[in-house]
Amino acid sequence: MEEHKRARYTHRKRSRKPTSTVQIPYITQCPTCGCNTLSTSSKTTARTLIDLTFTKNGVRKSITKYWAHKGHCPTCRRDFVPRDFAVSGRPQLYGAGLKAWITYLRIALRLPYGSIKVLIQDVFNEHIEDVLIIQCLQEVARYHTQTEKAIWDSMLASPFIHADETQVNIDNVNQYVWVFTDGKHVIFKYTETREADFLHEFFDDYKGVLISDFFPGYDALTCRQQKCLVHLIRDINNDLWASPFDTEYAAFVKEVKNVMVPIMEVIQKYGLKKYHLSKFIKHVAIFYDKVIEQTYYKSELCLKYQQRFLRYREPLFTFLACDGIPWHNNTAESAIRHLPLQERISGVFHTSVIREYLILLGIRQTCRFQEKSFLKFLLSGEQDVDTFKGSSKNTTIRFPDELTPLWKKTAETP
Image 1 (cartoon, rainbow, N blue to C red):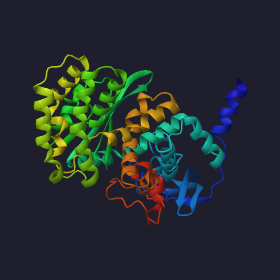
Image 2: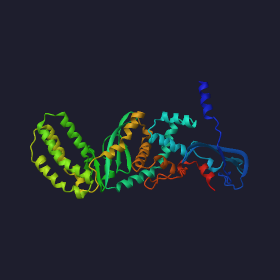
Image 3: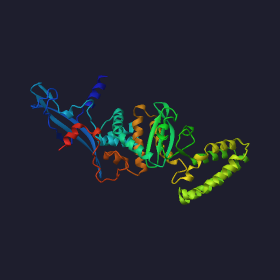
Image 4: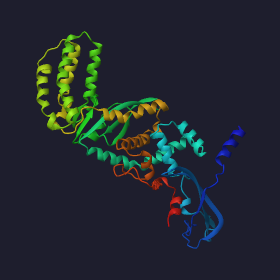
């Protein structure tokens, strides 16, 4: 037991040879009595910052020692460290570059904590615990709270938004993560249940079209909607394969095919242009009059899809009367596919960091949809993905104030 404690103490106190040393001016005013005649003390104080410096040719580790003389107050007869050294809480040991790299490994590359620790140990000879990885993610996510808000504001200005949800394991409890995207921006939210009441806050005043699957939770929203025809066609095909001897249903499927295929052919040729698609509104009306409303079916499958077509008559074909509205929800499924992959790798998400993880994942997917580098965005210190150029020659970190120690900023001030 004693050997174990001694080993931990030795690791915690192990010395690192600094690659550079920076002196910070000593304090000149007493923080207790306000005396302005502090003298330089012979005693010193120091902080060490371990960081990664990224250049266009690669990355290197740096260990910077910041030190300063303490100031001696003749009135209080006490020594005081510089104000920026007297930070509350645990002094920052790791710099912004290393935090960005850890975030990139976890979010973009989906590495579990154990692999991140091994990689940093093998490449940079630094031992880092799970709790410090979580702290890095939380700090970077806090800084990018405004980034998430900017993404959401941009999305609400879009003529359409895709929505989807998936079940995830959070601390061994099945909860739900929702994704919203317009093809360029991505936002994730999570809820303990699949109840969709929270959606009213976001979409009751939305002026565009919400594209979703047939989950009933979306039906109560007052905004215009487009239901995913891929889901509908897939369900119809699956039931057709499962009931090959249901001739009435086979005839029903043929009628659906006759109305859908010409629409898809025009989309493939001309795109989602109202000019070319609006002519099918009349064809859809004929289909409803002939196949859906005026026909009595005995087949349970026919009755099932008859009710679905009646219930979603307008949301199924909203895209025919609008320019550029997708008829499927593949974009949302592409954005949310990252989560099941991460769960398969990590096994479980944790409540303590799921909120921050989803903020960063939304930013990463936004960068991916806009074909921008997530790592370079983190290193840039910018907070708006839309204005980020993504390929700056100078990748030197000019990182967020919230992630940079005060004593480092002081040293960099002319």
